[in-house]
Length: 177
Image (cartoon, rainbow, N blue to C red):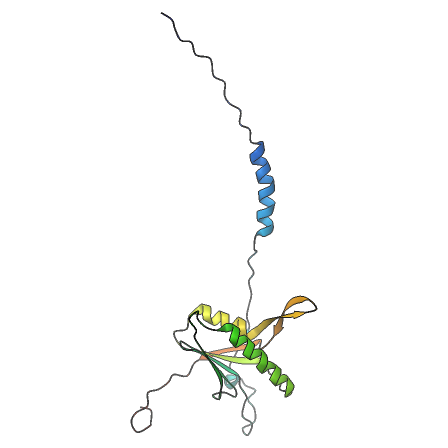
């Protein structure tokens, strides 16, 4: 009878040269494309009515308001006087149209020599957080091209927050309950 003899097997060597080449290229690319987290701090102001430097009694304070509700945006100037409404579209709040309108409003203020850099954002109770942050980013600045560079141009950087007025139901006599 013939016996089968097996050849002794040698341990295979690992060739990791191609893997090392991949790591040498991949690690710097990933590090360069990594977005470093940025922490930004927004300084919020007290609403004008609550501040200590109130205007004289005969002078009415001119407050620019942005009211955010579930139906859209209302821009008021002076406080309570509606300038423009922005309804919610199918894609949500129209921040682009709001930014364009605020840019035109800022230019109108500058042409009339009105120094206005503050805004009061009034929020309904059930407005979500991302909408608030996006609205604050929209009213603070906008992207502008200056000398072939894209920069943030200032709109209304002094932001105050408050609660939106609640619409009270009107009774038959025309008075609120």
